[in-house]
Image 1: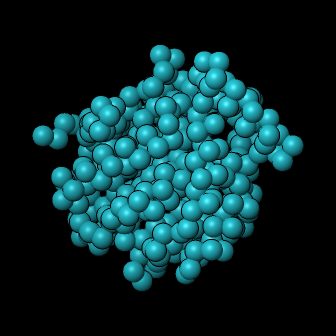
Image 2: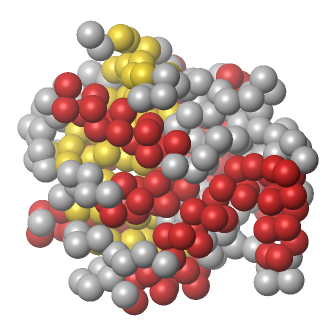
Length: 311
């Protein structure tokens, strides 16, 4: 039986008919999954969010997708949003193993099947969700296509600091300190603590203010910086993914020219060895292409619609 979960409609601004559900992953972790249906559907977009994100943040994106004829299913990954948090201190971004996110993804697909969501199912994955989605596609999950915005196929770290990041994150596990924050990270939410003028997420002032307002209204959704353990798991997963072939699926990736969070070289390398894959670099855009200026968001949606129509 599907169990209803809260959908914070006061901040989501999603299309009509939105609902959220609790779903138990195979290992017993409870995750929250949100669904916005489309009246005249051409399929369903499984939207895989990034680290720190939550269902309500994508209500406006779901509105855009409904106008294109696609329903939206999205998720709070374990350790964030209203899904089960992993540590007693709920603010660090943390996961036991990066592969645990695949268990969450499986739970998402199980709910999609239980709801009999219209097919084809298209993956749209952002940042950390891009790593999770790529691994899922390589596992043969039933996606018809996969699209990415600023996928985390590598983390942007200065070359001189990369060995330090590996060493500190590995050593912290050995001495039981993996729960501590990674260097430079704090318990503060990036959106709430970083001024618009210096933020790396969006150049749209109104969208930045919108994200701030969401977290001010519902601080229980907020997440701080990543733990050392998460950092090690993420670095290791990105390294492993880089050694694997690309899935046999149509692929479209968007990347802002002002990207500062994910590793651009890793994205270029992946696309170069993915037959038929297309990379669209968006001039002036920052990390969150779906939270950018209205013109950028409209451009991304137009290209996504054409991509899905072609497949």
